Length: 281
Image (cartoon, helix red, strand yellow):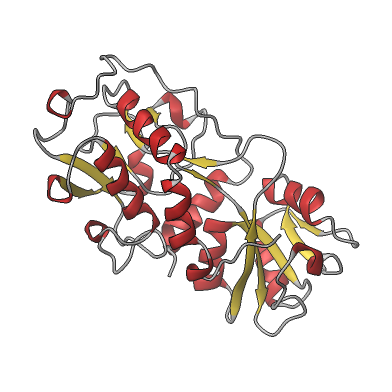
C-alpha cells in the first residue's frame, strides 16, 4: 500500500521542486558525535518521528519499530551509526506537515518522505539526502507497455505527464518517446487520461506512483523506475528542529551509510523489484 493522504500531499507539495541540501543552519555544537554527549529529546533514547498510518513500502505492517520497510530500515541504520541499538530507539507519531512546520519538535529526527526544499529549510534543519527520488512509469495491467522491461520499449508509447515537473523533463531527456507526450496542467488530469485509456502510460515520481497504483487507478501497475538526468534531483531528508545540535552527526551518519553502500542496499531491498518497481534501463 501507499499512504493516500500523505502521498497526495507529497505529490502536490514536491513535484517540480528543486531540492537543496545546503540551506539548513549550521549545527551549534562540536562534531565529536559521542553518543553520551548528544542532546536528545529523551536522555539515553533516540526519538524518531513519522506519520500514522505508516504505509508500505516505506514501512511494513504499520509498525515503524520493526525495522522493515525502506524508511524504518534507514532510521535504524542511522541510529546504529550514532551508537544506538534497537532497544534505544523510540518512535513518536508526527503528522506529515507538522514535521517541517516551525517550532519545537518532540523528535530527534523525523523520517516521512519529506522532500528537501528551500522554503521548508527556513523552518527546520534537513540532513543530507538519504534518498534521491526516481521517476516511475505507470500503466494499466494488460496495456500496450505494461510488460516493458526497458526504456527502449517505451519509445512508441503515448505518455501522459504533468507540466512543469521533473517527470516531464525525464520523459523528454531519458525516455525520448517518438511521439510528443500528452502534457497536463494537473497530475489528476494525467491520471484520468490513464484511466480513460487516452495514454498508454503516465510518468510520475516513484512515491506518487505507489499512491496511483494503490488508490487512484484500478488494475494499474508500476512498469518500472528510472533515474532522472540533469538538473537538481529531488531528495528526501531527515527532518530536525531548526538549529539542531544533532545535524552534523546525522549528516555524518548518512554520509557513512552512503559510502558503505548501505543506503543503496536498503533502497534495492525495499523500493526495487520486491516493491513492484523494477529498474528500467
